[in-house]
Every structure is written in C-alpha cells, then in structure tokens.
Image (cartoon, rainbow, N blue to C red):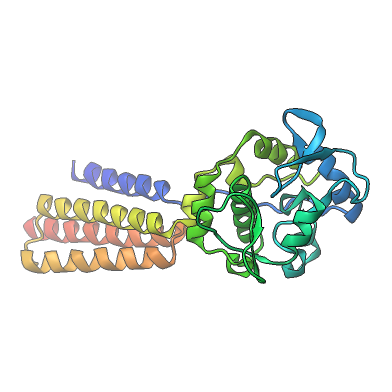
Length: 293
C-alpha cells in the first residue's frame, strides 16, 4: 500500500509538471522566400474576407485591388521595421510583412511603436514612435510576439514594446477572420509553410508574455506540491526528525523550488526538482520503515 501511495505522489507530480510546460510549441521559421515571392504573396495572404478581389491594408484599415503592381496601389510594410532586422530570413518573413497604404507606410518608417491612451487611428506619436491604431494594435502585438519567439536575437524593446503593452494590445484587438485566413495562407506549402502560433492559439500570449500570470502559476504549483509533501510527512512520520525541523525543511524546499522555476521555467528543470523532492520522501520513508522493522 505504501509503494502504491508513493507511485501516486509521483504521478501527481508529473501531472502538475505537464500543466506548466512552457516549451510545447515549436516556433518554426518555415521556408525562406525570394524577394519576388514576398511581393507576390500579399495578393494571396492579405485578402479582404468580404471581397476576394481586394487586400486589406494595415494601419489605415482601407482596401486596395489585390493585384501587385509594384507599389502603385499598395506598399509592403515590415511591421518590425526592416532596418531593425538582422538576417534575410527575418526581412522576408511573411508574418511580418503586410499590405499597407503608402502614406501609412511612410509615416511609420522605422519608428518604434508606442501605446496611446484613447488613440483611435494610426498616428505619429513623436519623432521616434508610431501608434498603429485600435484596429491593428492586436495584429501588431501578435506579429511582434511571433518575431521575438522565432528569432533569438530579437527583443520587443527594439520596437518600443514591453510585455505589458503587448498583452494589452493583444486583448484589446483579438484575432479576427482576416488574421486567421492570412495565417492559414502563409502556412501553405506553396508559401512559407509555418504559422504564427499566437494567432492559432491566442492564449499562448499569456504563457510567454504575461509574467504576472506565469509567477502566479509557479507559486500555485509550488504551494500544491508543498501541501502534498506536508501530508506525506504526516502520513509517514519520520521519527528521527523533529516536527519543527520538518516544517522548516519543507518551507526551504518550497522556496527553492519556486525560485528555480522562476528562472528556469522549463520541463526538464522542474523534473529534476520534483525527482529530488520525491527521492527525499522515498528515502525518508524507507529509513523510518527500516528502523521500525
């Protein structure tokens, strides 16, 4: 019965572990397209859901004939400014390239983004910053999040955005049909062949960019494991250790567990910690049984 109980504890640990795995989504870069392919792709990816003969333009929320005429009807906008990117793969990533009105494209230029309280349409905030407008702030946030997670050398701060603003924009302007269609089009084998996971799975934004929620999950999981350890201790009273020392010992374990998870926050790091805690319980119980026998 005691062995079954220990197996149950381990299974429960692993269930808790699986609930907080961070690295379950692969951020695939897909195919690297040619310059000409990225130009032609917008007439496929950025279609107006209500009119397949038009493309929807970012920032201005206007429309243009879909056929690419080399910048006459619409421009190509790099949401993460092209001048701030480092590689060909980054500069040609379709998830970061949107059809745009030439005026909006010129005003945006290589400016960073900035939130504007009560802002409606797109605008220049100051010489260094640009606001994308309420209709596209969520689109921008999800593109920036995708670029950060896909390319290790990119940081959202390079585009003027912190995690709090990304989450705020993500919530204020949720994924719509246009974004879903665009994401699916880019994911086709004939184009880039990968998705933006923050469009397909919007809740991922909280996992990767909402630190306050991550910390809550870490401490909650730590508290549950702490409670399990205390119950196990009372179930299998280790007579060689005073009860007061047990409280202190398990409090230290709980603190170290939460601290390490806050820095590592990966499945393998947590697994090592859980194995260590489980081993302590197992050998403590075994020691107690050997003395009582």
